[in-house]
Amino acid sequence: MLERIGKVIYVMRNPKNIMVSYFHFSNKMKNLDSSENFDEMLEKFFTGLTSCYVCNKAKHLRDLRSIVKIYEFVGKNLSDTVKDKMAETFKHMKKDSLASYDFLLSQTIHNDFLCTKISNMAQQEYKMLSDKMFTYKGTVLTLEDNYDLTPEYIDSIVDFETRDDDVFVVTFPKSGTVWTQRIMTLIYAEDFPDKANHITVEQMPWIEYRMTGTDFNTRPSPRLFCSHLLQQLMPKMLERKGKVIYVMRNPKDVMVSYFHFSNNMKSLVSSENFDEMLGKFFTGHMFSGCWFDHVKGWITNKDKYNILVLTYEEMIKDLRSVVVKICEFVGKNLSDAAIDKVVEATTFKHMKKDPLANYEFLPSEITDRPKGLYMRKGTVGDWKKSLTVAQSECFDCVYQEKMKDVPLNMVWDISELNG
Image (cartoon, rainbow, N blue to C red; front, side, top):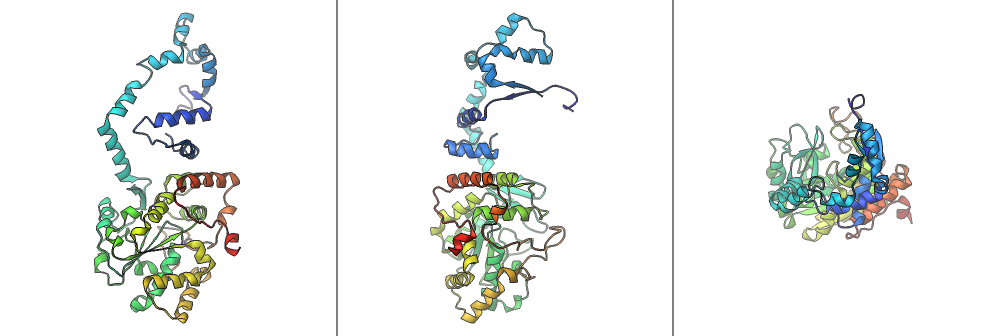
C-alpha cells in the first residue's frame, strides 16, 4: 500500500564507508556477527550477510542545512530558527542521549547473560528455513515423511554405538556420494547376497535419516552407513571403532551441481540464478549447511579417525585405483576379476542406467524429473560453463579466506587431471 499511500525517504551512503562503519559497529554489538578482519567483512558485504525520495549523506555532511528538503517533502513549514537548530553538527549528535543509541549499545555490551543466551540459541536452535528444510546445530536437513527427523534424534547420533567393522561414507552433497555408495555395496556384495537386488540406500542407509520404527543397532555386521553430517554431530565412538571414507570434490563443481539438483527437488529451496546460489553456498543456507564448515571440520579432525580421504576428481581420473584403495582400507581381498567387475558397474555411463544406484525410483512427490537427477554429467570443471568471471573471482576470494588454514590440493579443471 506504500506504493499508493505514504512517502519514502531513502538515504544512501558510499558503500565503502558503510562497510567500514558496519565493521566497527558489529564488533561492538554482541547480537551481531563480528568480523576478525576486512577480508571477512568484504565477504559478508558481498554476500549480504550484514544485517522514493533520495537524500545523500555525503551532501548532508557538506551542508547539513540542506536537509530543508526533507521539511518541504513531508510538508512541514518550519521557521528558519528551528531549521538552523535542527541542522546542528554530527559532533552534537554524539552527545545527544536521545539520538545516539548509546543506551542500546550499553545494554547490549553489558548484559552478558542475555548475549550469551542469544549466541547459544543461534548455534543450537531448531529453525525452519522453508516448509521442508530446517537447520539445527549447523547442519541443514530436509523433513521427510516417516523419518525420525527431530532434534532429539540428531542429538542421539553422537551416542550411537559403532562396531569395529562399521564403515561410514561421509560427504557434502554432490561430491560423489551416490557413486561411492554404489562402489561400497558392490565391494560388500558377498556379505549380503540376499540384498543383491536391493537399491543402494537400503543396503547403505543414511544415519541421520532413520525411518520411524527402525533400529540401526539390530543391523547385522558389517554395517555400511552414509552421512552428510558435520564431524561434531557424528558418533563419538567412531573415533575408536569403525572406519570413515570421506569424499571431497572441488566446491565450484559442487555448487553448480547442487544448483541443478535443488532446482529439481521439491524438498529443497531452488535458486533462480548463480548469484543467488553463491549467496546460499557462502552462508550455508542449503542442504547440509556450509561446505566450508563441513570440509574444515572433517579434514582438521581426521587424525581422530581411521579414515580414508578421497576426491571425486581422482575417481574420475583412475576409478580402478580408487576401488583398490577402498578394498585395502576396509580389508576386502577381492580378485582382479572382481575388482574389474566393480569398476565396470560403477562407471558413470553404467550407473546412469542402473536402477539400483541412480535414484530414479524417487516418487513424484519428491521430484517430477528423476532422470539424470543424481547422475547429471560426471565431469570436472563444469563450473566454467555456468559461472561468470566475476562470480568465479568472488568465489576464489571467499575460498582463499575461509580455507587459508586448511591446505587442500583441489583440482578445478579436467585439464589438470590430464596434464
